[in-house]
Length: 329
Image (cartoon, rainbow, N blue to C red; front, side):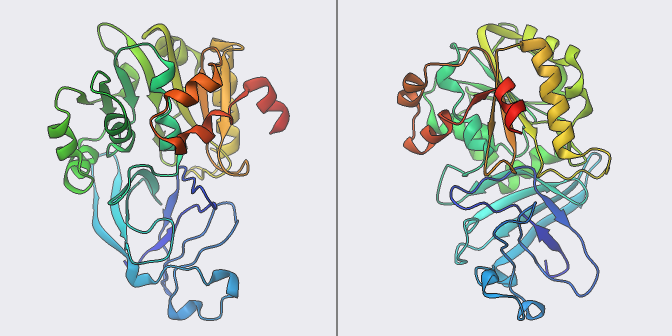
C-alpha cells in the first residue's frame, strides 16, 4: 500500500463520502487523505510529510491503511482497502471498494457500526416514503445500500440489485460480508448481473435507487430523458426514484466530464420528466455529492418519525425543490 496515493473526501461531522478516487503516483510515494475540493486536509503521515503544518496532525499513519485486494476485471480496476480501527480518523475501521482508474469509492462498510455517514445513509431514508413493494438498487457495488435497508427495516422490504461486473459481486461476498447478508436475508435480497438500465420486476418497483458511475462519472445514459421515462414507467403507483447525481467533488477520467456540469445536466433532464416533483439534497457545504428525489415532497415530520435511526432524521430537512437548487448553486 506504500506504493499508492489515496485521495478521499473528508468533511467534518457527519462524514460525507461521494464518489471518491484513488490516485497512483510515482516516487516519492506517500499515502495522502485529503478532501476534494480542498477542505480540512487530512494526510497520511509518512517521513516525507514531517514538514506539514499542524493542520495536518490528524493524519492517518501509512501503516494503518492497507490494500487487501487489487486486480483488473473485464469492466474495472478493483481495489479493496482497509483503514485500521486503531487510527484516529472518521474512516477508522472501514473497508472501501475502489473502482475505475484512478479509483472511485463504490462501497463502504464498518466493522462496528451500520451507518456510513455518507450518501448511502441518504438512500436508507427512502423506504418510509414509498408504497409497499420491492426496491431496486441500480449500481449494487459491494452491497452498502442493500445492507442498510435490510438491517434497518422490517422483513417485508426486499431489495433487487443490479451490477454489471460479476467480479464486484465476488469482492462483495469475499470482503464486505455480502455472503452473510444473503444468508441472513435469503428471501429479501436478489442480485442480478447485467445492465442496470434493463432492471425490472413483474409487479413494478416501489422505489428505485440509482448509483450508476463509469470511469469516475455519472453514466452518460442518465443525461437522456428517455432513460428516465423508462425508469419512471417501472415504478408502482406513488413509487419514487432516488439518485446519486454526483457533483463538484466528482473527478472523471475524461476531463470533459466535469462533475458539476454532469450533475446539472442530469438534473435538467430529470426535471423534463418529473417537472416540479423533483427535489435535491446536497451533502457537506455544497461541495459534496448531491442526491435527487422524485415525487411530491413528503410530510417531513411523518417521514422523520418513520425512520429507524435518529441519525437519519437530519437528512429529511435538507431537501429543496430543484428550481431552488438551481438558484442556489
